[in-house]
Length: 119
Image (tube, rainbow, N blue to C red; front, side, top):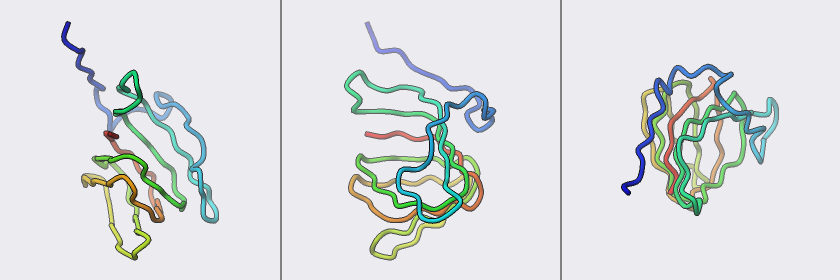
């Protein structure tokens, strides 16, 4: 049997009530402490691949990407600053790729919503 395809209709317009509270970011820097929520679309049985929708409220935190991640930002704006000083300004409509091992600081200025694929 072929694997099933998955669709999450109108991901950009999901109400907050349709998302699961995933809690505060793990390494906040100052206040306010950003909170995350999301909705998992699919995760492989072994956890190797995952895709879904992620939302984050304003705040700043240390970020460490442990697996390759592709994101399509649907709304909001933020800055990712790598430990080497490289700055990525990201806003709704932008797509980004973060390789495993990327480290830096993320600052969300306006609540961010994105679809993502982690591998």
